[in-house]
Image (cartoon, rainbow, N blue to C red; front, side, top):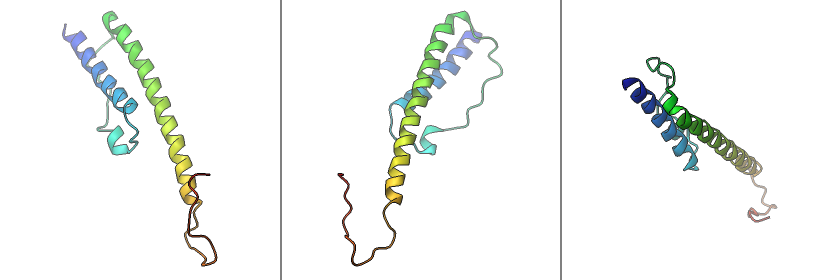
Length: 101
């Protein structure tokens, strides 16, 4: 039973990472990568009893990746907007930034 327990622990950890990504809009590297993950070498082949759970994990990881891609795109748009603001202002130019239109 230790073999199944080992794989269950691996899957639980990866499920936790996927859940954290899906539940946040904080994309800081420190938050998303709490530690360097190294695949276990002691687990052996995936037990048949965990195949369904591992398949669900794969789908959750794909959802998490899509969520990160969406956040990445939004961050890029925000950065482009910030970069469009001139760093120096001419006294003849407006001091207001239209954030609505």
